[in-house]
Amino acid sequence: MIPIQLTFHGAAGTVTGSCYRLDIGDRHVLVDCGMFQGDKTIKQLNYQPWPFDPRRIAAVLVTHAHIDHSGLLPKLVKAGYAGPIYATPGTADLLQFMLPDSGSIQEMEVERLNRRNQRRGGGIVQPIYTEQDAQDCLRLLAARDFGSWFDVAQGLRARFWNAGHILGAASIELEVEAGGTRPLRLLFSGDIGPEHKALQQEAMAPSDLDIVVMESTYGGRPRPKLDDRQRRAVLAEEVTAALTAGGNLVIPAFAVERTQELLADLTRLIADGTIKRVPIFVDSPLATRITSVFSKYLHQENGIKAGAARPFDGGNLRFTRTVQESMQIEQVTGGAIIIAASGMCEAGRIRHHLKNNLWRSNATILLIGYQAPGTLGALLEKGERVVRIQGDEVAVRAHIRKLEIYSGHADHEELLDWLTNRLPIHGSLMLTHGEPDAIGALHASIALWRERAPQVIVPKLDETYSLAKAQPRLMKAKPQSRRLDRYAETEAISGHDWHNDYARLMLQVQHQLRTAKSDLDRRRLLKKMQRILGRGAGTD
Image 1 (cartoon, rainbow, N blue to C red):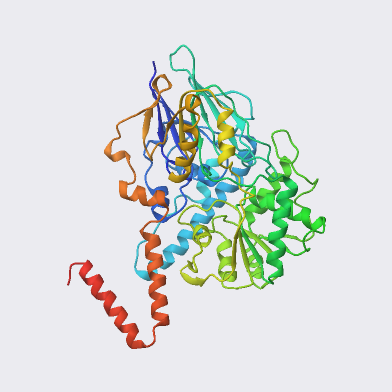
Image 2: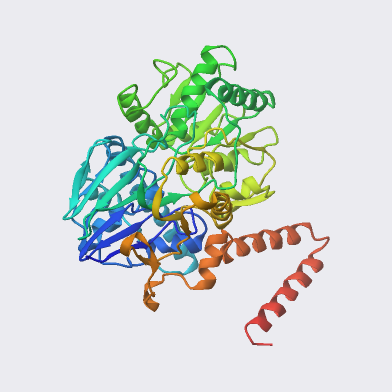
């Protein structure tokens, strides 16, 4: 028997950084190669060396184009990977824009950081990869249609199933010939879409499997089940309330799928006369290009559905491309809808619009997607009254609203429904791509199935499991194979590391100094802090 092992290099106890390494003897294959997102501790993993040799990877399979599943592909290629990158045609088309955009963003952010570091006397930082690195990566893309088997490596074949998440998103079925009487059958769920999505068909996948690696993003979190008409009615209510307040409606939205879903519903509501005909700014060059990809796949088999013949057209839609066009939007102080990336408010033009609108009491910020712990979006969702954006302190006076109706992920009951349709599972169910509470809630519900319940395993980052006879067994880890120590891993998973504590402390200090009654009180506060710091450094 050929030994088979599965290692979890990402999305283990977290929702980002999806990356699984399947070893079949001396053949090595990756499923996903995503970027870590969230607080600085978890994002630091993106800069660390690979915990494997990229030159020895035979192939990469990508579930979908979201950066937390594909964003480190250019880094992999830069480190020597030269094999095929298999994806569905929709995913391949999206990656043509998304990966270069990711490289460009990293170059700009590192340039800005280096300017600050130089002023502070710090060192120079290099981007994880550049826009050119991303362009070099794209030549390795190999598109494969849904539903057709294809050979990945010797003794390994794969098939894509529509996951219903975003355009091109797939669950990946693998069959491994390892010398047994029958092949080992694995399924990687990727991100599973919900029912009644604005543009996507419902998820599909096979049953009667040995190993299932399943996402659990919204474990323990139910959502109301709304059809297309009900979903648009909820959106109309939020838009009307925001515009009535007199300010702008600012919507942080992912450039892929979420923006296009919003545009399809907004143009329909305006055409019906349900909401005012106001300017809708799509301030994202990437979202503009991605929308053209969606238009290409409208009504195609394995493409996307749409409630209107031309869902992305409308005289009130204004797609901005240049920085100058983006800056002009800042002059609009009310009566407009502004959609910009990123959906978690971590990068891109949305941060400028938040900086310009958060302090306005008549503005509304509408969060419509998952907010990873430690992100600016998560801080706003939790009700922080003061935040830091690009080094500046910004008061939060705007109305902060949250809608779950545009989530790209199945909720708790939909995850269980998807899993029920995969039974029987002869080996184990491995829960990933979720925070600990979400995984725990899903695990608890599965346990209630009793005799039907598969064995459930919750892997940790960089853990390796032997899949002999479809019964996963944890392998003893080498000390150097773990990229986070136990304390840092706990902090990263909780989404609140020391960087968050530091930012909050600085805001508190600034507030105390600003509101102190006199300069004497300010000096006393500073001296008290100096004494504390002196004791901490062992100088007092």
